[in-house]
Image (cartoon, rainbow, N blue to C red; front, side, top):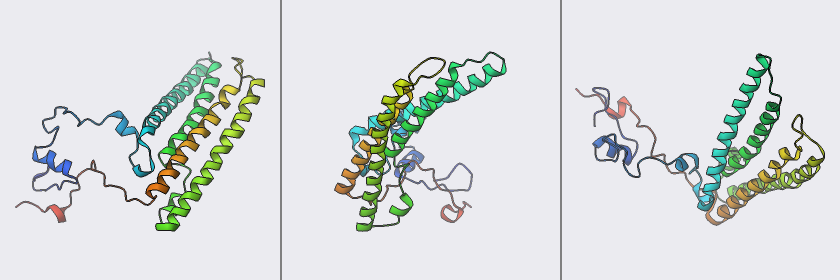
Length: 229
């Protein structure tokens, strides 16, 4: 199949790409086809290491990712507004509270989301270099350590939350417990996702090959494609 550049062949990287290039796949005419437009959930919920996840928790990962995006956007907006109002000589003092709240919530909600996505808190360089029983042992030990971290977040975070009702933020006078409440909640989510991975890992095994990415761009090489005369 000739590519976009005359004289260069483009090899499809997947059956989906091959069907599209041949004119038989969905969406070839440029019009949206049923089932071809990837939903937001499919883009935000990571399919990597699917064997360690329960599908009924996918909605929670999706909600956490959306919430992280909203918090990061709000944090950037509040910082910008704080700088602008101070520059023009009319600072909005309450923006300091909004900025710190958004920042702290984004950290702990992001920690929970990253735990579910296997993007954080894991010594993957060590575990992925192993196979069989050693891999199983290391994966279990790592997640037991993460469970310990989750327990500390829940226990000490709750203690700080209770003490936070005796301190207040200025200028609003809001109890500082409004900041600390996210810490034990994050610990609960981290613990839930870690238990999910432990149960599925012990049941299905941790060492599973990842499927190839069907949406990868086609690879063009002169050695493989050749040049038309």
